[in-house]
Image (cartoon, rainbow over all chains, first blue to last red; front, side, top):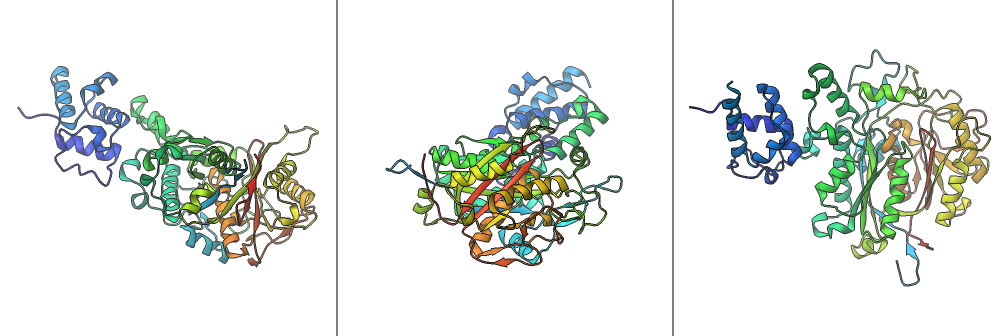
Length: 87
Length: 416
């Protein structure tokens, strides 16, 4: 089964909501790099989560931010929400 | 502090200008001396339905060229301007923050209205989409201290930082706080301020004081001290300055930089209807005393220049009371930019330092016929050549704030 929420979509949301620093290449090998190292602080991850919520209509509690330390973990977590919400 | 117990006044070694008159010192100064105005019909939104349709606007500021990509959607335009001006000021001072101890550098800016345009955008999303439509960055982007904080983070300056919110007076009070920090041991302080409230929400908030000019002619709307004064125009931009200890500047072969912050005072006006006099005269006198400068040593006064008749008159009377009738050259280059609120006074300081550097007093464009009672030697028509060793910059903020700052070409010993 392919994931509903893709890595490309994550990058698109990050670019639009949090911006990108010149020294960071989102197209590089970033899946397991911590958000903080990519220049995204906890507020940036929170904003990312809000954008996903708005797009798909399910809610991500603030406490779940801790479960999304890297892009790969974030994609994994969000896809698990689809299963849970059965959408 | 030196062995004798006296501290030497800090010097300004870098200037970053982001103003309607130009981006960068050279463009700004050229415009000021040429009397080239940055006031135009408002283009940042459609002003047709508002009583004020002119403002000082930045001609060519593209955040994409001057602000780190990540910070653009996270911060307000006023912070974009502050970050760009900060970078320019550091470059001008040849300071590479990464090479200096982070706790010996601090940031103190002035802010008048915070992140107004960002806030308006988020309010629109609240009304259209509900609470979930409001972005997480609103929590920090609107906040008065956002520009200070973002500059501090970006350049790794972790010393005692802060923000001054006293409308137009804030630019001078922030520089004095920087001076205080240098006397307390900071090596350098990034100070000054910017503002960018040219959005419907920002303009409407400003209209509430009844002091903006509604004259429908961009060249005649803001005429401080003139018989036809009708209020002022708003503007966006400001200046960030590097305030450095005299010793640090000397160690870096920067000499006295552009000049020194020799004295300052702040005052607060009595409430309307009070029998007590306005605070400006005493504020000027205390700033001169703080600098140990006699009135006759002052070569130029950069006026607050409200453009509102009663305010012009009270400022002219305060200046005449200290310096005598037409006793000192007075100028207000801010007619070229409009009033920049949190950014206005620090831009005046930048302009005053350039006047000291080049020995020329820039003129006031627009004002021609002094209003009755304004007994000032207002520099008009063209710049006036002559050595400028000491400049006094005045600023008043809405609500009663008064500030005066004394700049000198060389640092002076100050008794503590």
